[in-house]
Amino acid sequence: MNLPLNFETLIEDANTLNLYKQLITQLNKDLVYANIDLEFNEEVLPTSLKLMLHKTLYHLIQTKFSDYINLLYIVDVSEQKVKTLDGSDLLKLSEEVTFLILQREWQKVWYKNSHL
Image: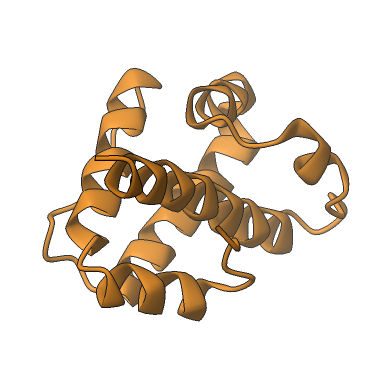
């Protein structure tokens, strides 16, 4: 599997394989495990998904950093990937982490569905 390199490609791949709803389900499951008060409807538009997740991550980084770290752990985002990001601009950082989370969730969903 080649991981999508941007949000648009990720959503395109998910829609092409009819796995967008499973992506939302997986994300919701991990948000519950991380005790993050955010849940997406399966019909959420990709742009709204990205915006709401980004906004939540930005808030977590600023006010509940341990919850943010816990979410990264539960989703299993690569620590090395996060460490390569520039943390000087929290808005940009949270946007990039949003993509890393969605990318990792996509990887889980793709793997589960390709090995059925």
